[in-house]
Amino acid sequence: RQAQSSDLERLGILGHGSGGTVYKVLHRKSSSHYALKVVRLDHDRYIMREAEILKKINSPFIVKCEGIFEEGGSINFVLEYMDGGSLANLLKHKKRMSESFIANAAAQVLKGLKYLHGERIVHRDIKPSNLLMNRNSQVIKIADFGVSRVVSQSMDTVSCNSYVGTCAYMSPERFDPDSYGGSYNGYAGDVWSFGLSMLECYVGYFPFLAPGQKADWATLMCAICFGDPPCAPPGSSAQFRSFIGCCLQKDPSNRWTPSQLLNHPFLTEFMHRFK
Ligand code: ATP
Ligand code: MG
Image (cartoon, rainbow, N blue to C red; front, side, top):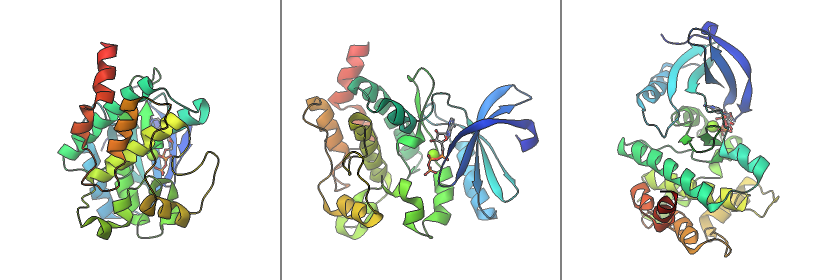
């Protein structure tokens, strides 16, 4: 067994999610900081076995899970601590991000997705609150793979409403697989969620709704399934508009893969400028 809660001193709350609470903790023996995600679930051997998959994930573009333990009816995930918070936090404070910031973030997220898909893993919960930064904001990693997988196994069967934060970034084919000739495999769904998240970073609001607009779940789902996909505004560069368009193809077979997107001019041209 690795970390136990007696080794971990809770220093404060980093945030709340639908599944539970995330604390900043100090591991006394190593005097290092971690994030501790506590998810209340009836403990169940199957869920614990699923959670074990997390420990095998090892990529510089994915928040590392250092340990998992059960305590008092909760599952505790000991996670690499990202001191810059999430892109969702940044959106709340800064409102919008520049194309160069987004290009740098996008390249790292796509490398993380390429790794996961290469390991035959679908993340299923890409969204701004699951993209975490280090303080200098140069390093961005994907969080909550597996956590979401574990949590959603109990959530999906309950009701989408209780999990609305996640459903909002779900691709059309995940709601409606029959309309897409059964080509649904989940990988392309991560790219949709990624594209929507990057567009949100640019415009500063969830792209399926007007700024400040609230909608019930049914209205939102109709917009995702039956409306045109959102696109980047005319004021943005042609490369960025094309990049977002390649991610937000409604038909998953037309959507670009992470490897293809890593070679899109929006990213390759920015990389040249930074050299
Ligand atoms: P959901 O429960 O739908 O996934 P969420 O992603 O906002 O929503 P959590 O994953 O519980 O919920 O995370 C809550 C917040 O805690 C995040 O938005 C982030 O700001 C913070 N957080 C999560 N993991 C870490 C981490 N490893 N390092 C630093 N902060 C983190
Ligand atoms: Mg999360």
